Amino acid sequence: MWPHSNKPLRLALIGMSGGGKSYWTTRIAAAGYPRVSCDTQIEDRLKSVLSAGGYSGINGVAAWMGWPHLPTYAEREAAYLAEEIAVLEEVLTGLENKPEQDLVLDTTGSVIYAGNRLLHRLRQQMLVVYLAASRDEQQLLIERYLEDPKPVLWRDAFQARAGEHPEETVARCYPTLIGARRRSYEALAHCSISVSDLREPIWPEAADKKRAGAGFLELVRRQIERAGKTRKAEPGA
Image (cartoon, rainbow, N blue to C red; front, side):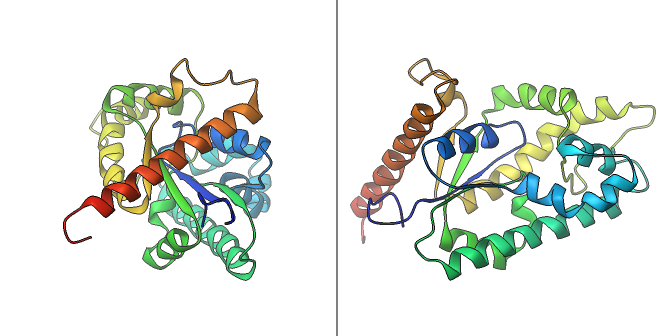
């Protein structure tokens, strides 16, 4: 598997909503690689349900799911996750049937809830990169979620207090959700890249998508090679 030049490039980006997965997979795609957005695929699979309620787009999916304190949320959260699992199953089966196929996968923040069997297949078929937000960047992720809501599976992390507005609960509980997910992201990923590092001035301007995508791939390649050298140097390796 990539990063070796004679292998297909199969890259899956994981991390919290607002961490840059769509931004960077779009730029890698501009460098000449096919891209699949799980959000888009899930939205397509839910289209009939969304249309019936007057919703559309990924923000419409978030509006359809609603706030976690609503009585319909648990059922819709489960329906969303079922469609996400179906999308991953389809993507991975396609890769297993076409060993030469390149692919850049823009996962959702909830990919870690897809079950061990699918996640094991994901690690087998793709190089998984975690876009890790630092603790200092948590407030930015919260603000992005409130300003531009995307579907989020809270998995009981949303614990409202009496008299508290849902937005206040989000601000208080989102760091707990990030912390709970961080360990799962790290366990799933082959390597991690700090979101803050991707904002350094050394990176090409966003308008130059092709160059930015190539730069991102080079950073991942160096991370993987560095990790390989570290493992070889470990006692007993």
